[in-house]
Amino acid sequence: MTESVSPSAQPSFIPGPALFGVGVGPGAPDLLTLRAVRLLKEAAVVAIPRRSDTAPSLAWAIAQPEVGEVPGQERLFLTFPMSKDPQVLLPRWEEALGQIGKRLEAGLSVAFIAEGDPLVYSSFIYLLGEARQRWPQVPVEIIPGVTSLTAAPAAAALPLVDGQERLAVIPASYGVEDLAQVLDAFDTVIITKVGDTLPHMIDLFTRRGCLEQAVYISRATMDRQKVVRDLRQVPAGKCDYFSMVVVRQGGRSGVLMGRGAGA
Ligand SMILES: C[S@@+](CC[C@H](N)C(=O)[O-])C[C@H]1O[C@@H](n2cnc3c(N)ncnc32)[C@H](O)[C@@H]1O
Image (cartoon, rainbow, N blue to C red; front, side, top):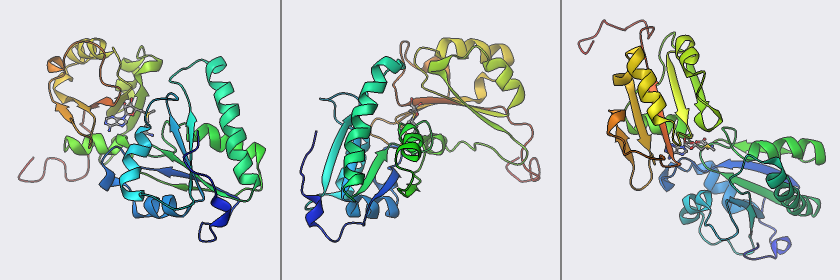
């Protein structure tokens, strides 16, 4: 679980106890913020979530090239399986909280890394809630990251929301049955964790006449990034885990709408 241990001998690390949630951005290492890089070089412990004991951590793969080797820093790998079952997740969290708690109680600074932003659909959110309960005296700081919710539209040069427009986000893995109502109430809708829900979306968007406003983006800013402007062209089957659909219905945008040469 541990790559190297002897942090207490390093006086230059950020003094602890302190807990940091550090966003590492959507995939491209040069979308890490300067602050994230500094933090990840100066924390005594970097806590690295991964999906299995043998799988590489994507968040660490993003951060590692910039952070490099830091003598005496501990890299603490923590495994959280991809599961919605609390019976599966809770024991792993207990184990992880025990490991993190031990370091905080020893007066160390711990930086927990997260893909994208740590406060957007991230395992750090559970840690934050538990930290407030278990270690109320420990200061917590969040280092925001570039979230995929903005990086993916950027890859497609697709404006997200403007003027009076309203934005909704739906993680499709929890169901898309109410997508029609959401489209009634919001101008732009981002559907994450697409899975096998694309045929349902194509059908619904076609009926509502907004299929042409929908864009599929996978692996934004990573290798093999894909932007598909006709959802029917996305290969059949389960979509890449790192994919989303953005549908911007428009119609209520900013005060300049319809006034410029490009209108
Ligand atoms: C658990 S959420 C993580 C969100 C992350 N904390 C953030 O701020 O971007 C995972 C979902 O975000 C979306 N996602 C994350 N990275 C992405 C990327 N590089 N390109 C497209 N979608 C991405 C996908 O829909 C994926 O299923």
